Length: 249
Image 1 (spheres, helix red, strand yellow):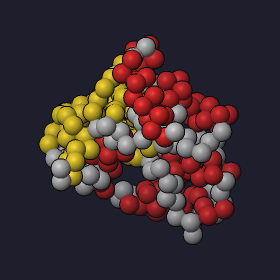
Image 2 (cartoon, rainbow, N blue to C red; image 1 turned 45 degrees about the horizontal axis):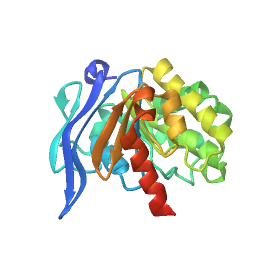
Image 3 (spheres, helix red, strand yellow; image 1 turned 60 degrees about the vertical axis):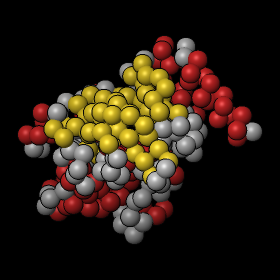
Image 4 (cartoon, one colour; image 1 turned 120 degrees about the vertical axis):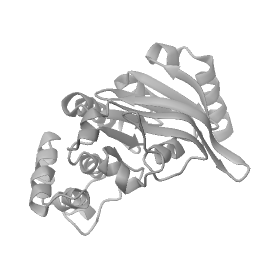
């Protein structure tokens, strides 16, 4: 683990705007993720949540604003370099390598980070064991049940202890009981690994059950932020979700 990752206790976006032609996907967004804590990012469909994650992880350049890791500007770095600097993510689709077994799915990440095959396999088994899924190590990724596939996606992102983990809709398609199990896992990631987590979810109840601070986007703008009590009492948040429900209906 590099000195930069050890010292990086915060991942911050400051005044981030993303514009596609005449359309602003994000407007002047600022947020902070701190080590060992779970933060939430919620909002109705089209709010700009995934765009924000893409900016923080190097998959999307911002039109203006800054992204800093431990106070160092990293906004111009590509996704693979940000991963090496300690910023990991999952995707809405699992994106596992279907032709590889679970252990190799994780080991590939380690090799991509510059570690040897042997070191990567050892780390892969350690992560699987810490998440209680070591029994899946030799299973083909293509045959995994949906919830296991999601867990393996998270395990792969945790290879070599990133400083920050951004989870993009990890509970999508899960039952209530499965989402509750996921909530406990996310808490353990922050507590046991010391990882700063940003949880991006449509399941507002799940987010509020595990987070210390929640950011709410609507139409690319930050409309609210705060702890559970602030979010649940916010008229702006209720209006954003009520409007989304009305449009969907």
